[in-house]
Image (tube, rainbow, N blue to C red):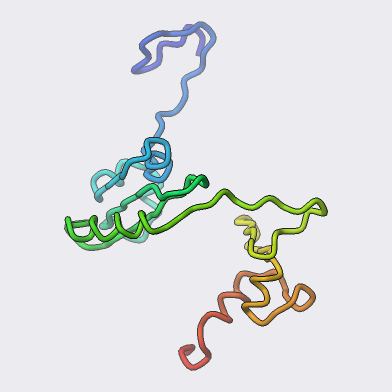
Length: 161
């Protein structure tokens, strides 16, 4: 919008276009600030994405974890009162115990390290390192690349319907 000056603009810039208001993303905020973020149903309801959720009555906690990988622990509860002091203390202990290392780099030939995996969220296909496949009793030649295959192997047959 020429002349800038959209709602809330403190310093209009000629030729600037109005950007949408940035919504509060708990994991991004926790990672950026390195502090805990606790959002209740009323905090989450302001986001357009919340309308897609099957239920609006949930609370979210995002806690930064240790390590150079910059990860976060994300917790969700449907308890009407959200996370109480005991819940938060427990989650803090878990976040302190979790270490998020820097992701392993692919080998020169492009293959994943033996203990790594890469998920393509758009297709649901997963590339899995040899060591992880071995844990599932598979090898690269017999794995079909589907997340469902690995998930199916994690639930004992006696627990399936």
